[in-house]
Image (cartoon, rainbow, N blue to C red; front, side):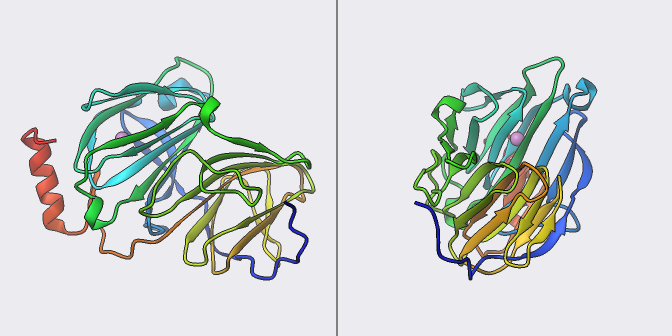
Length: 286
Ligand code: CO
């Protein structure tokens, strides 16, 4: 289905951030885009880290054994490979176009290590909050290799890797999440083409430009490479790649609207619950 009606309710960019350089794990260099002083969170998104380096010293240390409680981690790679291993006995390798959507729930201890000694490592880790009622749920995984992750190809050359949600042409992603009903699309747009996507009017949504430059909404606001744009109100998202081909992530979900207490790798509703998480981890109750 092609949309012929004019876009009259498309979301505008209400704020932008390039993020800031950060180091995490065993010296992994990255850009933290959500979870900074500038953009603490975009409910239910607690953190977004963007990795992009072909220098092994920037990533080779990886993320040795560490815990999580109270939210979900979503790892999506564009280049390179990461091996994960956890306290529940799961192990696997995340590859470009594949996704690992991990529900830490009441607690998991895992490691995430580059499965390569050189070359380009490029990708994202997104933290998605869990509502209070689900924070202490059993840990769970939704993990899909690239061969099982739908890739929609449109007549105009647009390619959309559908991690979660449903495109306007009806391709539905593999990840299921009824708690915040996320959409997570990786869109490659040829020069001059436009991409339209319906979005729930109550979702929080953002774009992150991986490559190229986008013009967003009716006002055709410019969003440059490696910049995140928070989208305002509306039930449609419309972007055009005027200046050449572009690639971007479109991510949205229902806000949870609950108090957020953070303590390193734990995200709960209260400070007491964070103290409890540290105590439980220290005493091997994960
Ligand atoms: Co982790």
